[in-house]
Length: 224
Ligand SMILES: Cc1cc2nc3c(=O)[nH]c(=O)nc-3n(C[C@H](O)[C@H](O)[C@H](O)COP(=O)(O)O)c2cc1C
Image 1 (spheres, rainbow, N blue to C red):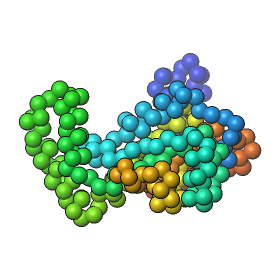
Image 2 (cartoon, helix red, strand yellow):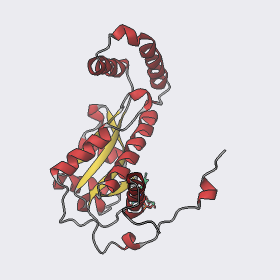
Image 3 (cartoon, rainbow, N blue to C red):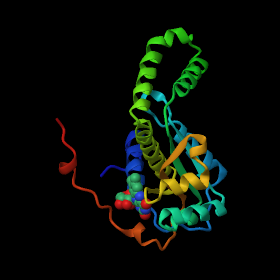
Image 4 (spheres, rainbow, N blue to C red):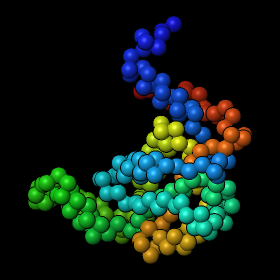
């Protein structure tokens, strides 16, 4: 048996990773008296911002709802699931409804600004992305494509929350058009895709004590 002292830093980090991935579960019952600190909210917001996207286009926006009366208005559009109102913060992950040439221009202006590069140096890449956006938009697939980017952000958020010992529940059980209406998302060019309730589990949430149901490795992993 290895002692704690003998474990390398890397081994301890790996142990912590799996401890937290097993600790997390989709919380059904939040402790409604507990709130995330402002620091925790800001840290998770930064995690969302750091999520990767195809071409780096970031075709999404994250609406972090903490106002209780807004949550009450959203709840009936989410099958009255209690996580909507009992969680501390509800992240509504919304995707752009379209991907316009203006969106692409906005992105390239940002690259130039952040990386201090001349725009001309990006011309080939910019043309490729503009062509990509044009095809997506004209085929009516932009929102679906953007929605897939939203799920990457959701995955990032779930894992980071677990590592920060913050509880979460990913949620697809809602009517996007209802959320769009309450939060006026369409007016801003977005449509709700997926939710993530954040906060702290109630001690008596029965789901917290249940074993994880996952298929064995040999069924879902194949090394070729
Ligand atoms: C995209 C997505 C949508 C989900 N929607 C809901 C939901 O609306 N309500 C809910 O209680 N759980 C929801 N879940 C939770 C899943 O049921 C849960 O993650 C799955 O059973 C695995 O269990 P675990 O997360 O506790 O390990 C959702 C999970 C994902 C990833």
